[in-house]
Picture 1 (cartoon, one colour):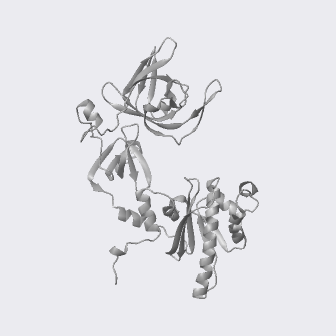
Picture 2 (cartoon, one colour; picture 1 turned 90 degrees about the vertical axis):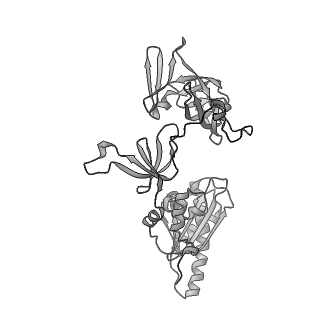
Length: 383
């Protein structure tokens, strides 16, 4: 499908009004775009478009706004330069270079001083009419080039820039391959030692080797304070989900997950509601434990990963944020004032209750499962 696009140096984003252009589209994205004349139009989604060139190469243009009321298709030169592309304007020609310094678009200026490009939108989709063959193979009569695909999770060695090296330093860093970076020929890698994502083109792979995750988990287990009660909130839906883990010493003794009864207007409010639920159950467990062990009741520590919620619990004058919250949820403030409960901040990276409230990536799920103390009894050795 051929489509006419204007290359605009003033536009801050790529935009189109044709839904069929999108390879993928997230219609949850919304907002407004303001034009030079002061007018606004609604954004109905954001996605990526697959462009096919005469040399049969394909390129993805990401972060394209879907605006149904827009009559023209716009490509933002500013957005291209942000991702590392280079724009060269000489005489009446505009040349666009990719991050590998290869030209992929050349446009001649029109009489009205505008730059227009006719792009071929690739709209291949799977079909039941084809068996054991992709639409690309059926149209091109050849196999697609898969040489850039590697085994997911294999060992990758990323080259370290020479300006950061001394004589005895390693020339590469050992990492884990996650996939290809969208919109470029670079690879997306994960460094377990620094727990950071890296994007690099200078990479060597060992596809028959994988990272020793058991050793990684052992090295990153951090001891937490005793007698702690952790919870997490998932506010992606209308109602948050409260997850609670109760610890006695270093051992989890009880846990629960439950959807909240009311809709929270902010993540701070949702955390506040969840903390109140944790406080009520924690106080009951504390009294039960005191009776069973004939020991004195001790102060409970609740670990919270939202500093605004902590301030709301400790400061009863926070009327602007708390006046619309149901009165019953202010019980935790009274507990803090009586010093039955103390609230401490924990980074979301170490909030173990997240495993009860949301879908986590596999690596983080395994880490959290190890941190909360779960063990597979089938592989344990009994004395």
